[in-house]
Image (cartoon, rainbow, N blue to C red; front, side, top):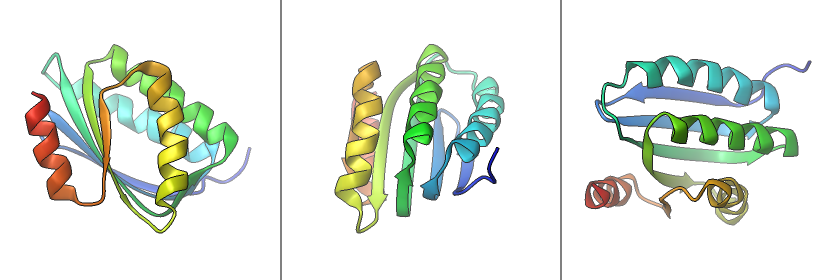
Length: 128
């Protein structure tokens, strides 16, 4: 097992989880993230909830981390995730979008990518 690489912060904003993440990410940090995420999801009292994800700097995933991330998305969908807005604040925007799109497409999650947090928040509201 390797040391976890990457950082994240999860906030519960009522019916929307806000996740800020800075990579690069390996499988170990995604496993830690998933364990912590489960406790936040268990606190949500709404049947359907949204997430706002802010990806910063070099938020790229190793192949194992990308696979683990897909697993977390499956869990989120099965526990009420209805929409996901992803803000990418990185010069690696196209690579990050490509990696995340593979996971999101696999589970047909309603999602969109943005460069500004306010645009993402507006889009989430429009999806409700």
